[in-house]
Figure (tube, rainbow, N blue to C red):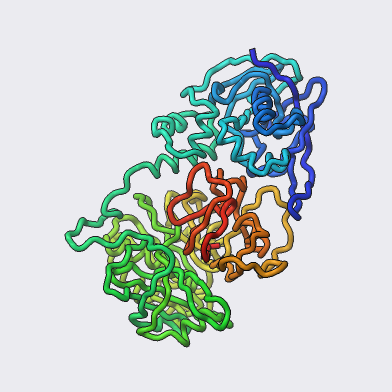
Length: 586
């Protein structure tokens, strides 16, 4: 019979960590006597980061005495007091290898249901003073698990724990944890996981994505394409940069020009997915070469790519491309990459853009028109006026090739002319979008200034579109994901403080920062943080893959080997260091 040994609580507090302040409820300690367990937590307890911990699905965290004993031996520690792993219930029994998702237990007056393994989080390592603890919990199959409160009631140390119902698929906590975080996934276990109603929605979504990734892709790649007897295209993803020739430059508006690029040896080019971008390395000024990324603005041919660049005021790189680049010049190009791509579904499609943000969705429109895609397509674009409406005729002609296309253009500074029912003056609004008849089950792709994407994303969600079906593209630094870190005033990315490093050059392409590597930083993530570049991470030990970043060029080594390697062409910046010059999409 399993037993509740200790009830541990603690309210969130601010803790100093690596020069920052972390708001966390990880500091928990045992309490005496009965405690009321409610729907969201134990009385006297709280969570600092409700995005990853707490809430109805993760109300109570459980850890086992046997795991305490295991870690005491593994870590050589004799100071592991109950609550130090952040758990609410320390129990004797209930091993992760035997407890299953969906199991229900009675403890004291309350009833609970197992919903998911512990979230991999840097704070457990912070609490124990063991930075790699999040990785160790997964690698050693001892994560612990969360409970949902089915019936509220009092519990106290010494209460017996009674199993009152087994989970429907018999999938253990340890197996569920390994299924998400470790390689060599068993498809049968993935199917089991998706048949467990008690499994938390976040884990269900992750498993749906993993299951979809295991399905074989249609060949040759996209709906409506036909097999060809022509020479096969080169596999996507040449390493680093390769030299390409400027075939021609075509003005599109007073401020936008399209640059056509071709191979220098007449070789076939990798086929890009519609929405992807190219990274260019350019000799601008006397400093290190600048790296910038630009969307492919049309479907590539076998031997040509097209990007379209707006000349930004005071923009050194865009100014160089508009004033100094000529046909016949050679440019260093990294292979097509990016995840803002047209999805292989049967749902209606909404393509939304503003200004130069038209480029990736225009490439999507090219693909849809080339295959005469039968899905309903809404094309919504905002421009300043007719003169600055890039690709006006091109997009209109492409839409005419689709069997079910809907075009609507907004000019912020010019009224429509007679006979132009698809043009309005102003900006998209909730009523105007509703009038377009966009179905709630559509997939939406939005590109433009950040405020525009935020506004349009909100309008489409208000119209009924599901948030996960609204995709956006952003070429500046992505919004940070730093769970638990107390927000501070945003600082423009800059060179790191302290002596200049003597190692290989590290370029953060999105942020426009290039700086030599210094071993004063434990990882590329720490270097980015020293430059105040927005970063994304959670476990900081190579488990959760939140920090996955495209490696545009270069090679790295891992200080802590990831439990599962990231996809080809990407790295985990939280636990990697450079071995050569490196360019990161960060």
